[in-house]
Image 1 (tube, rainbow, N blue to C red):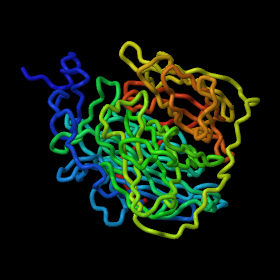
Image 2 (image 1 turned 30 degrees about the vertical axis):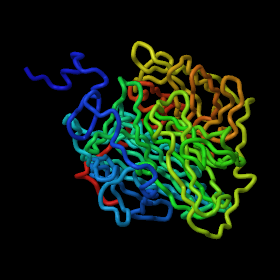
Image 3 (image 1 turned 90 degrees about the vertical axis):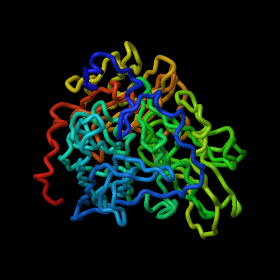
Image 4 (image 1 turned 45 degrees about the horizontal axis):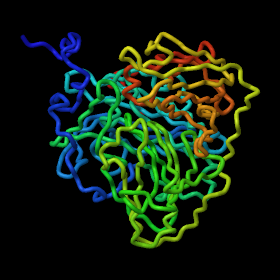
Length: 536
């Protein structure tokens, strides 16, 4: 008798380790090779994701369009890999790509030239290897969107449908768009549905920081490949997903040729479950003395002042979904120098393959003039006054009875677990009471400030605006936010909070909070059939 996969799952005949999702045939974990195909590191050229062009502009708004589709690309040399990527108005790009194109947008107040965006996402992904529809949701992570444009996990875009998302671009920051579909986020992002979105305002543009070709996205991901190049997704019995090939902007262990001048790098950890600790070194195998990353920004934009991270005694921790911006001054090195961006690794990541300990190489190959400066003061980060705190709430992130839970509850789209008033200041205690797991907690809508970790002051580079907080083993973090106010306006409605280990989120470490009462429903602007689509 032949039974379907769905029936097998219901009967318990398939363990979690069978949930490997190549785009071709299903293969259990024991049928895979132990490692991805071996390639020579630091041989492939670095590239920046292309910038997406608007399809139209008017007096206040830029209009963009992206189609999500399957494409064959060469990630490992000589092998073709099917991805779920993005296709849009990108010069010389024909097929879908992953990571998706970068959207660079002018933000801030309208009086200072700030503009809003309308981004249309069209789902043409079809079906997965099991014959099920690949449904998507787009969340612009870090944007203060209204509930109906925030990417609620169950506000789905089925294949053959589209949705137009409206974004206010109210704060200059490095943010990113990614899939957020209920129970499928880890798989969908792993297969390619993510890209960077950069907002700049007049104040930031006026600073003498590196610009143009010297302002570079670094999207960090880890993947596992079958011997034929097929992407393999393994959630390790619903615990975590790790790969043994490190990609930067979709390229394995790239080599970037640089001039002997300053560069600004915008690092995004877009991995499903891997944390990184970044350090600069002149040795691929170990840390050298005196090499510096100068951190200038975090999730919510520029810090108040630069923070130097100097090897071998310091490094920059970047958990899943966190973003940090840093300067590397290559003028400190003679032509011909090779430097490595290394991943030191730390508790909560599986880093038993030494290939994951070096990420990319910089080759200093040419001389160029440099008029950029790292100012002593960047953008003021005013502390939220403790005197304004209306209440304190506590959220415990833990695993029990085989499920990932918040306050011993799993996801329910009809349940609200916190209801701050619009304009209220609250402190939230984010608690990880156990060991073996770390939880990068993402709180939608608001930018927050970290008060302390187990009563200890945050690291200097954590003292800016943030929307993701790395809650380590046996840690309690206190974070503070003013809810529902951005650019002098009130935003009300229901928003998500979840662990950004995407496997934890999918099973089901996610909940809802509601700001105020009577805000628009997250489902009030549903996806529409492509057959009804008109030009933007």
